[in-house]
Length: 119
Image (cartoon, rainbow, N blue to C red):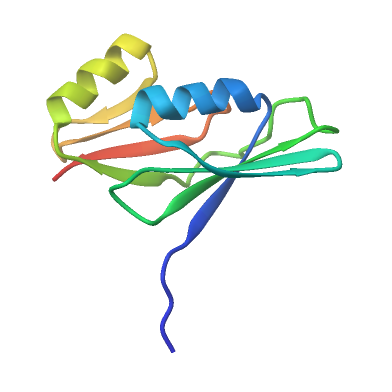
């Protein structure tokens, strides 16, 4: 039996704000969308991988999500670490850096952490 990573879900409070963030910060664009009664699910991704991030907006949950201590994250590898760091610094979304490990983290508009690692 084999398994392949397919997607990860993040619930978001403002879908358009999140779509704008993920496209600008990480180059992730909408791949497909499901419009349901009281919810919208948008899958974002890029040509570098088949893995997708599922952004779910729920009509009856306009308040911020409680992410607990946020002790989880999604990691993304970049071929231009310096340019990525510069962009994220300009966007003001870097929340933690670990120069000794050569990595840093950014937060999305809902507070989810995303680790940026060099190739």
